[in-house]
Length: 431
Ligand code: PMP
Image 1 (spheres, protein in one colour):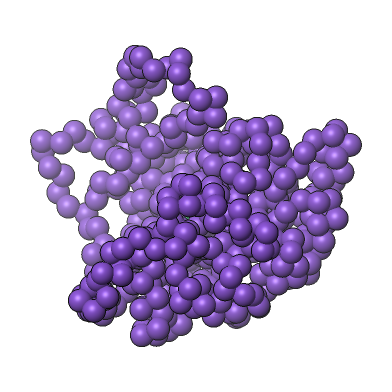
Image 2 (cartoon, protein in one colour; image 1 turned 30 degrees about the vertical axis):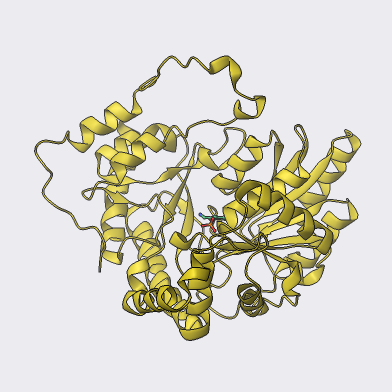
């Protein structure tokens, strides 16, 4: 296993406590920028995450990080993959290292149809665009639909990387309530009616229906057709972001929103969580006319997705037991989810948390009065890290929440991390 283990700290590097204090210091690293007056308006909403500096400290081996969403890649058959890569380069290197089509390789797009069929999607490979991770697909969809000031609806809370994209295109993100069964249809209906009455242009409903990042909840089956119907009736395209859908711990995957109305939904998928994020391969499945614009937008951004990555994934899918690999990932993550929930019940009974049926995350609500963002430097000093809830809202809510990830640390490290977190939380009461 290539999991980080605790090591004796190097005496030449500052202690975690000193580094955490320095990272949390406001204004650190500020320099005069001679180009300040020249930046485009759209960059004004881009902000460096105030927690990024702390994460550099949190990545030290002595810190248990419950912060990142890194998949557990030591579970992959790396020797097989090395052989496949070698063979690919020897036999088809001149193609794998060449430019390719802007839309992505036809053979891979066909294989992506097999992956999506597991969630009830029936589609044509011509409507699939291969992207550089689903993150690029988020960027492309926003680029072709959103003008500055347009509204994007998103769950409260929402994936931090999507909020960053929406901000970069100067969208106005309006959060819609979610509960333990996912996005609340009545809240969506109300938000759309209110925004319509105000004359606002609502362009997208961004949703992560399965094993939500960061909330850990899954959209109930009976809500799925209702959400799609409400959005369609109000003329709003659904952007269904589904990187975790095949990582459910019990039972079969639920049908994708796309399967209810393919003309009303752009579906995003990714190989980052079911295989490996380093290839940076994801995709969008879109209504035909939308797909055409997505390809034009992607060509102008990147010319074409990496051929090497696409052919590697295509070879993996056709020669390895990818379904078996996903099953084994699900078992690893289920065990880690159980470790997380068990440790929370043991050490943090004053908090509440969601019970994820798949994916990587649980969403913790702290006892009243605690501020997860303010507490983070103290947590890092106490050798545990998490992501404060405020990162997942466009409007500064979320102080009393945190996202805990159980994907990367071993069950033992999860227990230790939650034990340390509980000490920090208890000390907060005494401040
Ligand atoms: N959407 C969600 C909800 C995610 O959690 C992530 C990765 N953390 C992404 C999109 C982007 O994934 P990738 O670009 O690696 O496919």
